[in-house]
Length: 303
Image (spheres, rainbow, N blue to C red):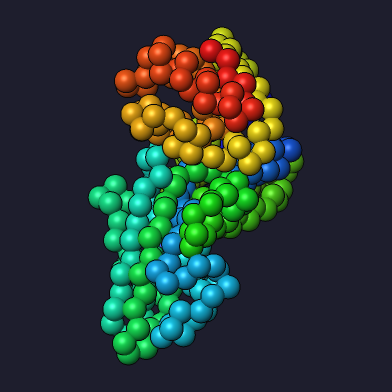
């Protein structure tokens, strides 16, 4: 079977690339086209703003004095701000503009490991005497994540839908092509548009590597280690949303749990014993105090 083919770049302009893959055995144009398009649009790592808190604003349907756009329009524009960030943990961004005129993505202050891809994109317009201050949270991820996945109880903090994919659009076309006298070969033409955080060529290369990873597991399967499943947690209702400070724990114990990442009843009850054991200053005596405090709230805490 023919496995050798050429990749030829036909048009390369900014964040757009058109290239041709040929010759492919009959049927492999669509096989590669469908596979690569799916990976390009849904499996590449990107970054997006997931939460916003605008100074003086309590909800997304508010207006801000001196800003031409309403808050909802500002949030929609923020979704179009594109960043390059590959860290595993969310990072904080900030925006503080007190001069009249256009507010651009480039005005956002970012950590050193975050790069802005479209600094000239306009987020809002301010009149004289107005100011716009906002705190944002940026996270890396793949695909699409709805705001419902990130509920918040903090007044004024607004969760945003997040489109992480750095690839904006992908088109492909399969045509017949000739090799010698044979005409039953495929020519695959690809068009890729990205948001500027990754080049189209790098995007196609990353997608091919992802597919190779899946296919490699079929050819040379590696043993999958089964991880211990987290303890099933029954619905705790409103009690599950309580912070560890609100259930009557001693300040020292509550602070230790919060610093260890177990700041709510729900997180605490679903935690594994070995994870709790890693929390600093949390010994057996403290765990018994936690168990008693949860029992008073009608929550069973098994160690």
